[in-house]
Image 1 (cartoon, rainbow, N blue to C red):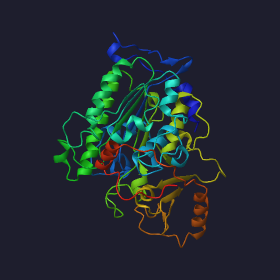
Image 2: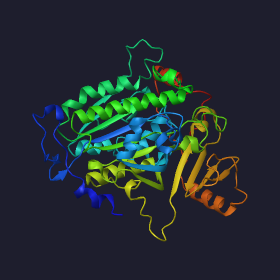
Image 3: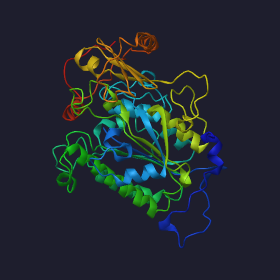
Image 4: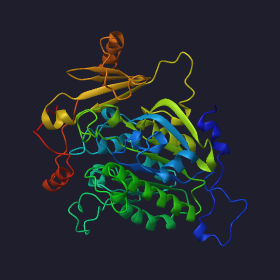
Length: 434
């Protein structure tokens, strides 16, 4: 299959915004920046969403028509993994194409993304895109550096709502409402929209009608998030930009839901926390309905966007172009996807956890290391490390090369810490920071 960069000339153009058009054009002119076609880019991040709780990945307990549509319109990655189990570091990897050990953001509290590190938003802004970010959680506030490169970055998470959580998160519908005010003003030019939804992050309190429709509140929140995605698609269609847009839907990490004794996602890094949905809808329906079984990682997202847009990526990225992952070269070494959980070390002084996924093997390095064959044991119940000693030694050697140094956290003011505590992100002792 051709690489994505080779497909760029065939991706087609973008119609003028429907709300500005006097009549439909049979041959719409493509949007251009200089001599290159520049489709709209939409990145949707649904926080804490497990891939195995979506119908597109085989789950039958919830209805998600909007995400199903994106999967049908785009390329679905069956095995996509996060590098880390908390929100801010994961989004830093999404935007930079780097591992947490390289971009340096290791926790939700006390870390800021270095201004010298290129981000997807900053690069698209540099290439003439209008850039807007709209987030639903205080964790992604602009002061963390995650908003760098956005001309408009709306992190005002509903201070005036009067809800108990009004100063730390807001409903996805409210976040979309803010984004919807911005979109019409940029619909006739290349734009990058980042929309972050906090459903289904705890506390699981799905709004009507989803609270009554689903007995499991996590599923209800997944359905609520899907409804927001559906409304976004509808608005993109009204503006005449959906067909030509590059749309990426993903999650930053999953959720334990007691599969291995943890309800949330702060400590353990089993598959239910690391494996996330990842769907890429290309402009003009290119490769619609395709599924890729090769292992992917969230740091691959930025390189894929650069490839579709025909832009040279920043040097030194950990990720590769997602859409070429089905072209594994004969004789090439198998890909190793590295993930970490340093929250136990930072907040409790415990050992951190690191892991490698290689083909169908998942190795978790800890004081009690584990290794699972995912093809035979997708629920990770049978530790086969004694049978796979050679593989375990190889994985340990690979992880030994990962920088485990934690820089001294930036001092957060008491109000910031209080808000993060309200979200359940701060607890325990001082931890071991080197």
